[in-house]
Image (cartoon, rainbow, N blue to C red; front, top):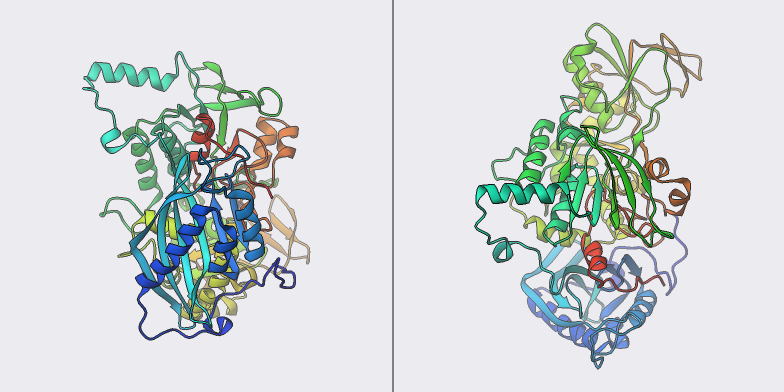
Length: 601
């Protein structure tokens, strides 16, 4: 990432180290007292809409990240000048009688510091902050926030990070706990009501979600219990088939949270698949399986009317659904597999099942990231002659050392609950995350030094991620380019998985692959671990070129360090891309007429 020279408008991207701050850490710190004193001033000035009094409580190079609560968008403001402009534009005076002005300004109220979540943290010896969590309200919503305070040369603690987040809409709580259904639910009545809801016999869904993987299910669950009629259309025969039908050796390479305490740390694909299916059934989500989306038409002028989603079901029935919102939840990238042509046997990893089918054959895997390594490991365990074709360098870290260090403090054993970790994690702007991981990545590399040196000796091309930040920016920007080693790397070191990476492919032949340097590689089977096309191409196929061209980029980061369209407004009203998580309150707010003006300055 290239950065402009530092200025008050665009300050330098740097960690708030004690040396930079010219500060010393007091020997005895009462973190709660520090947090309370700062928060009392912060909340009082925000309630008054006194921007000029708020900004001095922050460092000149502070970050303020907002998710929908104040901007109805995902925005990150870096530096006091930008934060001042943002708050001045957004905040209304507390004298406003309605709590919200007609021009979209917001009155904040009912600030509460959660003293149980105030903690002094020392990620490194030169990096110290007091982290706190709080709640607040606007006229239409409940919000939550996180702040991190650092010491300054004057002894005054100031905020380096402030995060504000939309938590819920007033008057529209989730229908859970005491608000869940209290009907007697005799079996015959429940079945009839459930069928009526599931089939949308006399109604239309407000939201159609394309894809019934974990992302689509999560969005549907939240919307259902916010009272938004939602339908998932899934092309596979069963929920979970997106995992169930992949290669047999597939397993998660990172731990999962919020599952039963007996859940294995590393989850095999069939178990994930069955869990997703049971989740959909237990939460009574409306899912049409074996259903293909044939075409989507934009309603009205530029999305000002309902969409028309043409579907075909397994029994041959066709229907045109007319939702106000369409959510693409079709995988991390959402597009079709990347597939070159080859005269012999060639499959993408999405089609691959097991190495047992390739006994006695020469197998070449094109691609040296997660799927490529997984499939190569499967073949090596079956004593199949297998070669990884590495086209570019790869970031490698071990599960043994890397994941443990990577997840220390969150999403691990004896760490805060996932809902706390989610909020704390979201409070870190992406550019700040990169700075933190530029320190973390060398630590992991040192722990993995024997493995990495073994790979280098084999000629495997390694990298340390974007600007030395390890895996984090590769995931955020690309969703790939890395492998968490579960055994394949050691197999490469031992020579049980062969490696070729000295030339680019010139062409595929009936006997294998020919390369630009004149070499060749015989292959009976070629397996492509080459990723997927962009979701924009799926929109182009299902909708049209015009809508696809109006979309902002899907992945990659904008100038503020926010993902361009994943989870947030994509440039086309009523169209969304859920690839990971999605804040469903934006849809609910639009349904209830509560969605404010999106802040664009």
